[in-house]
Image (cartoon, rainbow, N blue to C red):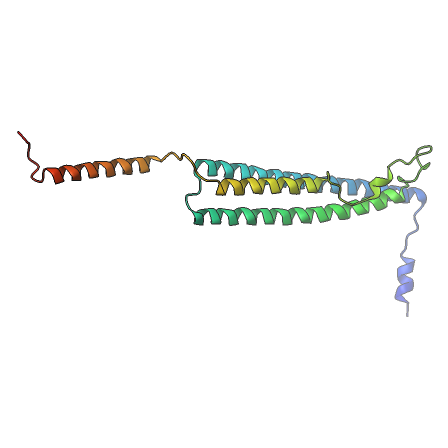
Length: 198
Protein backbone atom coordinates (compact mmCIF):
# COMPACT_ATOMS: atom_id res chain seq x y z
CA UNK A 1 0.00 0.00 0.00
CA UNK A 2 1.41 3.39 -0.99
CA UNK A 3 2.06 6.07 1.62
CA UNK A 4 -0.01 9.25 0.92
CA UNK A 5 2.78 11.45 2.28
CA UNK A 6 5.25 9.97 -0.19
CA UNK A 7 2.75 10.44 -3.04
CA UNK A 8 2.37 14.12 -2.14
CA UNK A 9 6.16 14.54 -2.06
CA UNK A 10 6.40 12.98 -5.49
CA UNK A 11 4.01 15.64 -6.86
CA UNK A 12 6.34 18.51 -5.96
CA UNK A 13 7.63 20.14 -9.14
CA UNK A 14 11.16 21.44 -9.13
CA UNK A 15 11.34 24.67 -11.08
CA UNK A 16 14.43 26.20 -12.55
CA UNK A 17 15.48 29.70 -11.52
CA UNK A 18 14.11 31.13 -14.76
CA UNK A 19 10.75 29.43 -14.19
CA UNK A 20 10.64 30.65 -10.60
CA UNK A 21 11.34 34.15 -11.82
CA UNK A 22 8.49 33.91 -14.32
CA UNK A 23 6.09 32.70 -11.61
CA UNK A 24 7.09 35.56 -9.31
CA UNK A 25 6.69 38.13 -12.09
CA UNK A 26 3.22 36.77 -12.90
CA UNK A 27 2.24 36.95 -9.23
CA UNK A 28 3.69 40.44 -8.96
CA UNK A 29 1.58 41.65 -11.90
CA UNK A 30 -1.54 39.95 -10.53
CA UNK A 31 -1.08 41.43 -7.03
CA UNK A 32 -0.43 44.91 -8.42
CA UNK A 33 -3.59 44.71 -10.53
CA UNK A 34 -5.72 43.50 -7.61
CA UNK A 35 -4.30 46.17 -5.29
CA UNK A 36 -5.04 49.03 -7.70
CA UNK A 37 -8.49 47.59 -8.47
CA UNK A 38 -9.45 47.58 -4.78
CA UNK A 39 -8.26 51.17 -4.32
CA UNK A 40 -10.15 52.31 -7.43
CA UNK A 41 -13.32 50.55 -6.28
CA UNK A 42 -13.14 52.16 -2.84
CA UNK A 43 -12.66 55.60 -4.39
CA UNK A 44 -15.65 55.13 -6.72
CA UNK A 45 -17.81 53.99 -3.82
CA UNK A 46 -16.84 56.98 -1.67
CA UNK A 47 -17.55 59.40 -4.54
CA UNK A 48 -20.95 57.75 -5.06
CA UNK A 49 -21.80 58.24 -1.38
CA UNK A 50 -20.69 61.88 -1.55
CA UNK A 51 -22.88 62.39 -4.62
CA UNK A 52 -25.88 61.00 -2.75
CA UNK A 53 -25.08 63.29 0.17
CA UNK A 54 -24.97 66.34 -2.11
CA UNK A 55 -28.38 65.44 -3.55
CA UNK A 56 -29.80 64.91 -0.06
CA UNK A 57 -28.36 68.20 1.21
CA UNK A 58 -29.91 70.04 -1.75
CA UNK A 59 -33.26 68.46 -0.87
CA UNK A 60 -32.85 69.58 2.73
CA UNK A 61 -32.10 73.13 1.60
CA UNK A 62 -35.23 73.22 -0.57
CA UNK A 63 -37.49 71.46 1.94
CA UNK A 64 -36.08 71.56 5.49
CA UNK A 65 -37.33 69.13 8.12
CA UNK A 66 -40.46 70.66 9.63
CA UNK A 67 -40.51 68.95 13.01
CA UNK A 68 -38.43 66.88 15.42
CA UNK A 69 -39.73 63.42 14.30
CA UNK A 70 -38.69 64.16 10.72
CA UNK A 71 -35.25 65.27 11.88
CA UNK A 72 -34.84 62.14 13.99
CA UNK A 73 -35.82 59.93 11.04
CA UNK A 74 -33.37 61.75 8.76
CA UNK A 75 -30.63 61.44 11.39
CA UNK A 76 -31.20 57.68 11.68
CA UNK A 77 -31.06 57.36 7.88
CA UNK A 78 -27.78 59.28 7.62
CA UNK A 79 -26.26 57.34 10.54
CA UNK A 80 -27.18 53.97 9.02
CA UNK A 81 -25.85 55.03 5.63
CA UNK A 82 -22.57 56.16 7.19
CA UNK A 83 -22.24 52.93 9.21
CA UNK A 84 -22.85 50.73 6.15
CA UNK A 85 -20.38 52.78 4.12
CA UNK A 86 -17.66 52.46 6.76
CA UNK A 87 -18.32 48.71 7.06
CA UNK A 88 -18.02 48.27 3.29
CA UNK A 89 -14.84 50.34 3.12
CA UNK A 90 -13.33 48.44 6.05
CA UNK A 91 -13.83 45.20 4.12
CA UNK A 92 -12.08 46.68 1.11
CA UNK A 93 -9.30 47.99 3.36
CA UNK A 94 -8.77 44.48 4.82
CA UNK A 95 -8.61 42.97 1.35
CA UNK A 96 -6.19 45.67 0.23
CA UNK A 97 -3.94 45.01 3.24
CA UNK A 98 -3.83 41.26 2.55
CA UNK A 99 -3.06 41.93 -1.11
CA UNK A 100 -0.31 44.33 -0.08
CA UNK A 101 1.23 41.69 2.21
CA UNK A 102 1.28 39.17 -0.65
CA UNK A 103 2.81 41.82 -2.89
CA UNK A 104 5.56 42.52 -0.37
CA UNK A 105 6.38 38.80 -0.15
CA UNK A 106 6.77 38.64 -3.92
CA UNK A 107 8.90 41.78 -3.98
CA UNK A 108 11.08 40.38 -1.21
CA UNK A 109 11.50 37.09 -3.08
CA UNK A 110 12.60 39.06 -6.13
CA UNK A 111 15.12 40.98 -4.00
CA UNK A 112 13.57 44.37 -4.73
CA UNK A 113 14.35 45.61 -1.22
CA UNK A 114 17.92 44.31 -1.13
CA UNK A 115 20.79 46.68 -1.98
CA UNK A 116 23.16 45.77 -4.82
CA UNK A 117 20.64 43.30 -6.24
CA UNK A 118 19.57 45.46 -9.17
CA UNK A 119 21.24 48.81 -8.46
CA UNK A 120 24.77 49.46 -7.32
CA UNK A 121 24.88 50.54 -3.66
CA UNK A 122 21.11 50.84 -3.17
CA UNK A 123 17.89 48.87 -3.26
CA UNK A 124 15.40 48.99 -6.10
CA UNK A 125 12.58 49.82 -3.60
CA UNK A 126 12.98 51.62 -0.25
CA UNK A 127 12.53 49.66 2.99
CA UNK A 128 9.41 51.63 3.99
CA UNK A 129 7.59 49.95 1.11
CA UNK A 130 7.80 46.72 3.11
CA UNK A 131 5.45 48.11 5.79
CA UNK A 132 1.67 47.70 5.69
CA UNK A 133 0.99 50.14 8.54
CA UNK A 134 -1.44 52.92 7.66
CA UNK A 135 0.03 56.40 7.44
CA UNK A 136 -1.94 59.61 8.20
CA UNK A 137 -2.13 60.27 4.46
CA UNK A 138 -3.09 56.72 3.52
CA UNK A 139 -5.82 56.04 0.99
CA UNK A 140 -8.48 54.57 3.26
CA UNK A 141 -7.92 57.00 6.12
CA UNK A 142 -8.57 59.80 3.63
CA UNK A 143 -11.82 58.13 2.54
CA UNK A 144 -12.90 57.66 6.18
CA UNK A 145 -12.25 61.35 6.84
CA UNK A 146 -14.24 62.31 3.73
CA UNK A 147 -17.23 60.23 4.83
CA UNK A 148 -17.04 61.66 8.36
CA UNK A 149 -17.09 65.24 7.09
CA UNK A 150 -19.95 64.41 4.72
CA UNK A 151 -22.04 62.79 7.47
CA UNK A 152 -21.35 65.71 9.81
CA UNK A 153 -22.46 68.20 7.17
CA UNK A 154 -25.71 66.31 6.58
CA UNK A 155 -26.47 66.14 10.30
CA UNK A 156 -25.84 69.87 10.56
CA UNK A 157 -28.17 70.50 7.62
CA UNK A 158 -30.86 68.32 9.24
CA UNK A 159 -30.75 70.05 12.64
CA UNK A 160 -30.00 73.57 11.40
CA UNK A 161 -32.70 76.01 12.59
CA UNK A 162 -34.97 77.18 9.80
CA UNK A 163 -34.94 80.98 9.61
CA UNK A 164 -36.87 83.19 7.21
CA UNK A 165 -38.68 80.29 5.61
CA UNK A 166 -40.82 81.28 2.64
CA UNK A 167 -44.30 79.72 2.79
CA UNK A 168 -45.40 77.59 -0.13
CA UNK A 169 -48.40 78.33 -2.38
CA UNK A 170 -50.83 76.18 -0.42
CA UNK A 171 -49.89 77.87 2.85
CA UNK A 172 -50.24 81.31 1.25
CA UNK A 173 -53.67 80.51 -0.15
CA UNK A 174 -54.79 79.13 3.19
CA UNK A 175 -53.62 82.30 4.94
CA UNK A 176 -55.51 84.51 2.47
CA UNK A 177 -58.67 82.43 2.82
CA UNK A 178 -58.45 82.61 6.61
CA UNK A 179 -58.00 86.39 6.47
CA UNK A 180 -61.02 86.80 4.17
CA UNK A 181 -63.13 84.62 6.43
CA UNK A 182 -62.14 86.64 9.49
CA UNK A 183 -62.93 89.92 7.71
CA UNK A 184 -66.32 88.62 6.55
CA UNK A 185 -67.17 87.42 10.06
CA UNK A 186 -66.30 90.84 11.52
CA UNK A 187 -68.52 92.56 8.96
CA UNK A 188 -71.41 90.24 9.81
CA UNK A 189 -70.93 91.07 13.48
CA UNK A 190 -71.10 94.82 12.82
CA UNK A 191 -74.09 94.56 10.42
CA UNK A 192 -76.03 91.37 11.24
CA UNK A 193 -78.81 92.02 8.67
CA UNK A 194 -76.32 92.59 5.88
CA UNK A 195 -78.18 95.76 4.78
CA UNK A 196 -76.71 99.06 3.68
CA UNK A 197 -76.46 102.22 5.77
CA UNK A 198 -78.15 104.58 3.30
